[in-house]
Amino acid sequence: MEIIIWLVVIIAVIALGYFGLQALRKKNSAQVAQAISREVAEAANAKLDDSARNSVYRNLAKGDVMGAVQNYRAATGESVKDCVIAVRSLDKYPQVAPAKELPSDDAEIQALSDKLEAQVEREDREAASGNEQEATLGSDADTWIVPSEWSEQFGSENEPSATHFKMAFELDGESREFSSEQLPPNEYDQLFSMLRDSNFEEAAKILHGYTGLPVDDLERMIATSPMSGASANGNVADFKFEGQGPDGPVHFDAAELPEADREALFEAIADTDLDRMSEIIVRHTSLPKDIVQNMLQTFVKRND
Image (cartoon, rainbow, N blue to C red):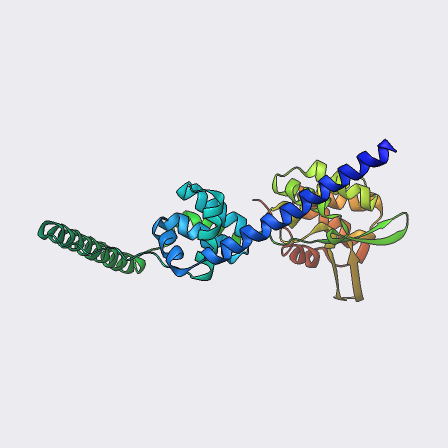
């Protein structure tokens, strides 16, 4: 029985406290609503500087009343209730920054006049300086030239001959083809970086993994091809021709040569030995040697 009595007492206290808080809240809300006025807004506005005023209205624009109250209280130090009334008044009766009073004293007027004249003179000097710089730039623009060393180093004639290559070859009696576009992006970048650095051995190892050709043959091919950046006029991997010879149609493809002859041709091209190149081509085409040598002049330049 006593437990029930204590429970009833506790519930009654809680209920009284709840209703008391509700009544107090309504009373405070009524007092705040009655206190909101244009005069309070004007008085509150006068207590704020430009920064605090902007902060209060920025929070009000976002619907953050408590943030605005905190800004106002930080600027004025008033009680929470007074700050709430002031912010509510500013929200209902928006205010602007108070106009600054114009100087009435002769000394203040003269000081303001001197300040304005100095500002005008400074702006005129800056404008004149800007025009002078534009005129100088305009006159110099007609005489600018690209340094010759820039043209030699970065000119279009010095750009890589290609960013892709394709090679046809015969392996174990089977004709195959390989293109640099088949490489994954990371190995593609590595390959051309090695070619730029003349690291032909490592470049040949990358190609070996995709073609199955001997690394030594690939290295010689790269060293004598346009991929290496050399001055050769052709690519060993694509060295082939067709035409009409004295005895009929002629077809020659370095990729179709037996491995021994292909290796010998690579070595001859690497050494720019026209005689050995001609001997191999004549043996596989039956063309006259002088015709073959004349044709090879367009592929390999002899170093006299």
